Length: 256
Image 1 (cartoon, helix red, strand yellow):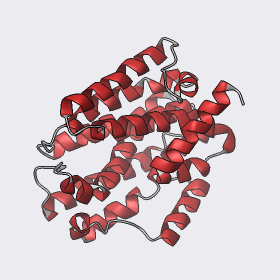
Image 2 (cartoon, rainbow, N blue to C red):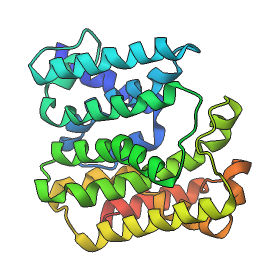
Image 3 (cartoon, rainbow, N blue to C red):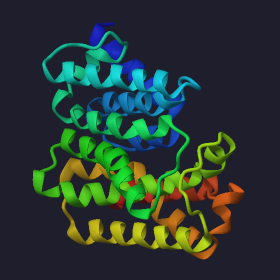
Image 4 (cartoon, helix red, strand yellow):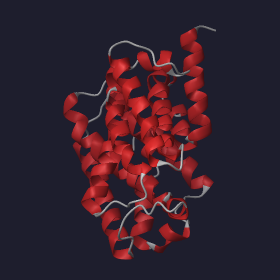
């Protein structure tokens, strides 16, 4: 097995173990497109884990800085000294957006919550929004699609963020200063509006539409928050396995 093939396999395996929903979405993507996505998703997973690498925020920030430096090197054609390095260099242009992700993740190293709803949306755009746009660009999206893709990515990121609330609270990392039911409903409504904006924009065509597949559950989850915001704190914000599979199949066939 060549170095690149081994690196791509390592990327796919990392996503399979660490981000099963994104893995399922990528497996629902055309086979010839997956190798453009695995390195981006594997690098995003490493970046997301970095803030939790140590109980010392400064140590976690150093881990993030390593990835920032590595991604800057990728843009100059240098392979990071990591098993996903050879694969990441192959998608150097879209990978540059992950630098924004890593910079925004510095907030995750510290226990202070996001101060308000606008601050949270800015974080979601820089993290999830950037990942979705990196994937879309890797699949050939035009530049004018960026706003719509980021809107969808931030909304999908919100759904995942709300699912993680109980764990964040248990780790003394309160995600938002105000987690009242009214605030959760407001967030969910804004998320649904962003998804609707992306759908109406029809900004992605052809293979690039697959970049939105990892958000196949977002609309249903945010609708649930609108109806039952208490499920966020209770840890019940999830779909049944049957519903998840059915929605992914429909999204793969018709688009998200």
